[in-house]
Length: 462
Image 1 (cartoon, rainbow, N blue to C red):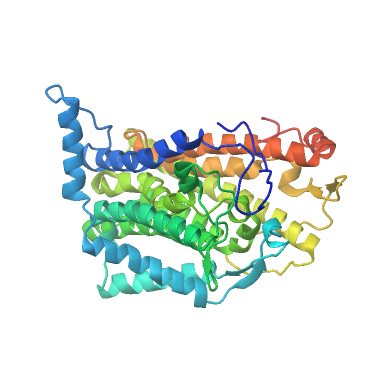
Image 2 (cartoon, rainbow, N blue to C red; image 1 turned 90 degrees about the vertical axis):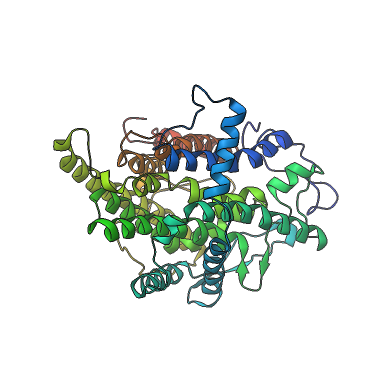
């Protein structure tokens, strides 16, 4: 297991071979286990949410473990078989979004310089905002005209889940074979399972369509938002109203997806884009893992539409929801402006700041003459705005979002809590890696920053 972020060292061909001896996720054994375990976990949670009233599936007193496994497999076969209709729904969405990526208006930007390309910076077309709103209008039109009722996503959830899982494997296989056939490998270790999981190619693209950029926002988060809207549509269709709990999730997923779309140009320089390779990890997680495992808060309500407003203490419902809605909007303001402050500071530093009027425009998005620390190698550390209060305040907001998605569903089922627990653990691990990387990169300057801003997640607390 990795003990921290490390930069691979190369000899010979800088592009093709990884000589670092460093393996993430316990190497081939760990990555192989995840490729088997992820799909099984997704099916297990879906079965529990759908057929076991939100509880963990377990053998009955008269059922052997073997017969229990056969029962689960039979449920998948009967209710999650990848039908032709499911393939059409999933891949129609995929192809439409890829066309939107290429042809809708957007801003142009450049990624980080690539060492193996002689410092070349790849150009990116960022059209996610237009794609998001056109997708909403198109989907609303299809639903209102009856051409495609949005709640079909819920009715066909099992088959679509299977299509997403199979698509993750198929696209990963095609990506691996394509990279090898075109001699486009990058940092290969020679261990097939590990290389397949981590990927072969660094920057796969066809014309203006950059696959990593395309998959990161449009596929996972657009689908997640669509699942929430589908649940609201189904509840309205059957009961004539949408509960406040479902409205909360629709709003939460809208704001999160919208933020990812409007900040797409900031993704170009992230670790996933300039360093991570195009393999099973990124492909499967974006095509299937994120949208169909993070959605269990919504799926819980989709399976309990008639009781979504039932609380064990009814008198607590209204004040609790008021607190949840208002606190979410407040934390969203912190999260959105934190990202804006950092990204606009970096853009101005590079002389490439272009103000955008995307929704929502919030106060304190731009810092005037911010306080900074200049490192020995000429880099700068922002020590102002929200980053003058805590060093990882954006992670705190992310964790709050995840927890709120679970809280609004209550505690009757464990599955809505998969995402909050998984994400919190992941964020803590990522924060640890970030700290190690920054200490290695900035040295004494980072130590100075830690003294100036001693709090990591919450001001005056931790």
